[in-house]
Image (tube, rainbow, N blue to C red):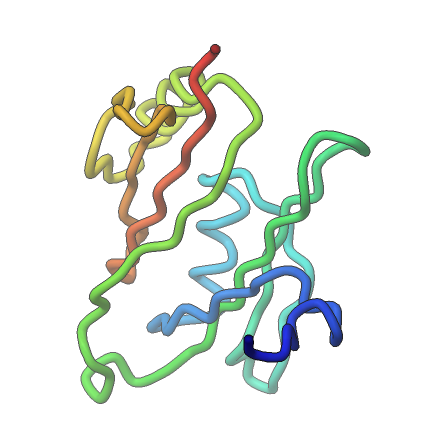
Length: 136
């Protein structure tokens, strides 16, 4: 059996890095439209940022996304998506995003694997899939 490095070294949390055309604009969108909070912006001029959502104690884990400014013509097209677990009310989140003009890729859908999911696309083309557990 392989050595369990994740346990031994206490791996915890994932912070995806998204290539974006403009780090400041992307951070503003994530905060003003998608409901995150700005954690930091770095560089002069700004070229790297991190946004976060830290839930109240006992209501899940923090979500951090890093936004890395790159020349979009030099990057390969994004082929994946990021899944963000939500504690409740995917439909309410959907309604808010619709009012804010968010590009909805998939309206809330109850999946056979026990999740209700909503997928959106942010201005640089990344897909974020918000999901929550269906009531049992």
